[in-house]
Image 1 (spheres, rainbow, N blue to C red):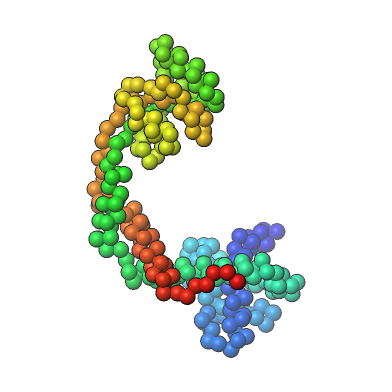
Image 2: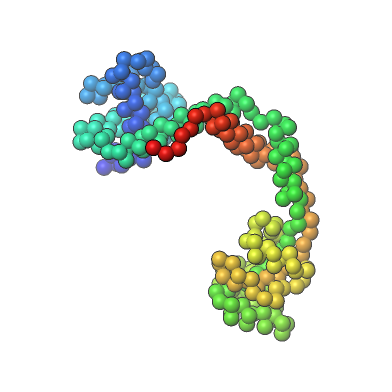
Length: 274
């Protein structure tokens, strides 16, 4: 059973085997190459497929494997091809669902390759990174708040907690005793938060507080009813561009790729519907 179980997490490779077979049948140039590692029921198993499978499953190149590991990997891929062949014999490839899954995998694989190729040829510039940094500067340099809260499931419970606070009860002690959420044991401490990291109604209530005060009315979110204590507030010092260059580069790459896709869409002839 172990050999069979190992095959199933990577069944999508069967699609590659099918693709190689279709190319061979059509008489077109075989993009998978001439080198073969096996012939299974008369169908060639390209070495290139074995190499891609090895990279995907072992995170190593095929040439780096020991003879034992290479044999194990080869047997895995042969198992894939045997299953794919049997599936075809059983008529599974006539399924519209399977055909759509294979087509989607093809689209995703080719699209990823096209995106990678485009980004390698058109990497973000320093000006792109600066633009993303400037766009996000207000968020990076806004206020941050040190907050505690007591989360309760009903408004009446929250009102009762506020009544105890009005009588001088300690906020952290009440949180430890009555809060439903995971922050209860540490006195309801949430640490330093920015506005965009809080639910909108929660953030609005925090903004209305001054340091050392708590909300006089329960604040409702999807989690329940909150009683909020603002311990401190301060301006957030934005990180230097160089300190977040990797994050900015990722954001710039996403934007550049989105722009590229939009440009392709503008040039394409797309008709919606049947």
